[in-house]
Image: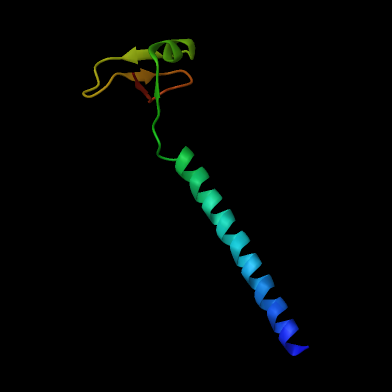
Length: 74
């Protein structure tokens, strides 16, 4: 009887720990997808979103203003 209680407690703890790790991984993935990731847009997307293409940036053109402000333009 005592072994069953201990086994049930171990299984419950493992299940809760697994859920915690899954939630942490999901939160980390969501954060990485939104924070700090700079995506690129097409010239049409930039202008359709209300922005203008700034070609004076050193590496790639950048969308200025509008919905895609600050994103690179491919």
